[in-house]
Length: 138
Length: 148
Image (cartoon, rainbow over all chains, first blue to last red):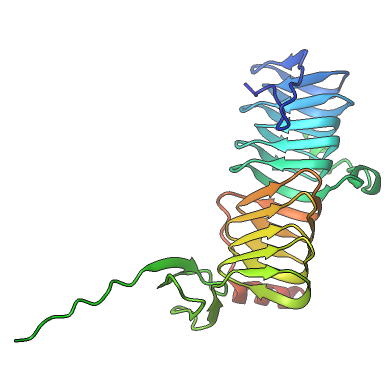
């Protein structure tokens, strides 16, 4: 399970939890925060926080307020505030955020745009074919 | 009577050649050595960038510290990199890259550890892999020539 505090020390609320044995496919939106202990595939759009616990898998394009990663993530991430990669984080995808925090041991491959104006300057992360392929065809 | 004089033991340390990426044992106080594998000169010393420097490539088996008023425009191959100022260029770091709160880094980065303070500006492709092993320079140059 992920620590509910950000690197700044402020506690983050996660009223919604995707359980360790749950698989969610599709578009996920919420107000406050969600913790992913299981698997999420698709698209996530929120002004709140999203946290991927150790053992959690997220294969999605994410647009959120802040993102905390301790598990495995594939997809493009956009955060208006910050992205935190904790020691067991594995991230493959492009990142756009105001702040980036990377703990020792975290792995990350992707294009990175970080800075106070990154969110305004950088174009929104384009949806990748990889994500589209991962979703079931209609 | 012959008195055996004991030679003072040489304090050594291990560094990785910036050209062939093989480990070499060197005296602890050495500033530069010749690699025993590829016979090329390897700079060991730590560099401090306090003003504007623009060169093609900077390679050291030590540390580069780009200070607050420093700007480095170069491709960098280094063991440790700390940026408080500005760096434009591709970075290959064997150990860690640390970008301070007023630091700016523009370029592609390959390293084992990345530390970014809030407020830092980053732009480029990043590969942060705790098991990252850099490619030897010769192989990298050959690959670049092929693509060009």
